[in-house]
Image 1: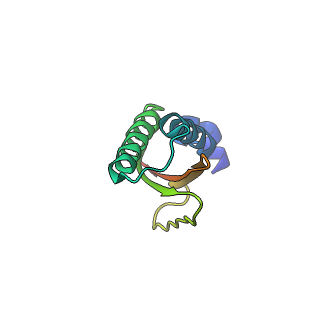
Image 2: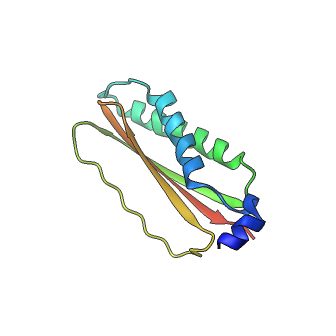
Image 3: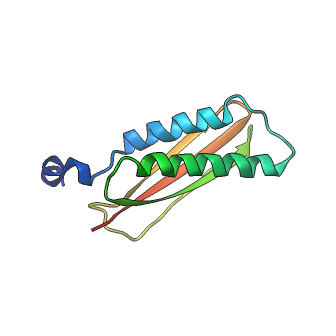
Amino acid sequence: MADTEAAHPEAFHSAEEIDGIVRRIIQEVLGDAKVSHRPELSDLWCDQILERTLKEVSSLGRPFKYMATCVISKQPGTLDTAATAFWDTQYDSLCCCRLGNGSIDCIVTVYACRRF
């Protein structure tokens, strides 16, 4: 894969680049927000994080179809996620980003499936 990636870097995505985008967006959306007893706020935050993440990652112009999930939970608490997929491991992958602000824990997973 390294030779192919070196020859066509635009055909691959960088997990580090996506992680940076997701972290920045989570920080911008959640900031220092505190847990609310209003579940619609969690829904709104998830929608904003997913919409902005998919828009920015798609704007990188790479030949991938992106899908994402977002989970927000109250801290302290235990929040874990797991993912499994049947795909082409040479081209397809995922990036999982976990970030908290002391009150809220957020996990965003972005799946990248190569378009041919």
